[in-house]
Image 1 (cartoon, rainbow, N blue to C red):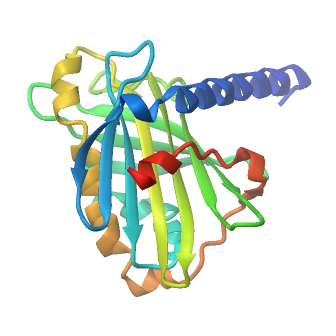
Image 2 (cartoon, rainbow, N blue to C red):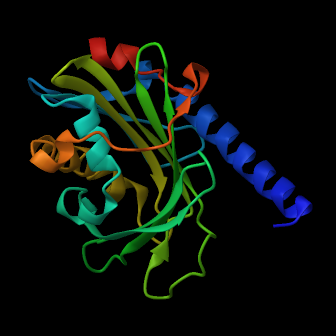
Length: 238
């Protein structure tokens, strides 16, 4: 890669990082609606400035070690077993050093809506004092040529926070906002917006019980407290 290409790539990812953070910080808990609550799970939907599509914030208490959840999240080969409506997920590229990875995901949609392709860059950060892990998700829609069979999701921002509560329990915060592209009416998408976090979390809760996830994942987390984006405290106490 030439010097100019490296500069362009750095500028591109820095712009993504700024946009992602601004969206998270603009999600105001006062404008969010609690859509589901039980003894271990809460799901909120939240309006996002400049978008007709709702985001969601999910707070879950998982009876498993933090490293079990992380091991599952990094095991993309089994994503079709637990990530809601995922038909395919595969690794496209491991980026250099601790810059994360590029992942392809194909999500099924009910007829007559076309299935969606999602291409994301995920990057992990760890607070060295609290051991909280934040995995940032951002869209890189133009990473591959488009496939006419599917609709490419043009925008996505989200993240996973995994906070250890004890040796065998952790809190998982899952936040996501998607602009699905194509011709899906926002009112229709917003009706079903909690399906993804609900079913995904229910499945995650069962998957992390498997013996294979008791081994900590060997992932290159950036040790940087300032990059662990939180802004979820009021959702926990709601």
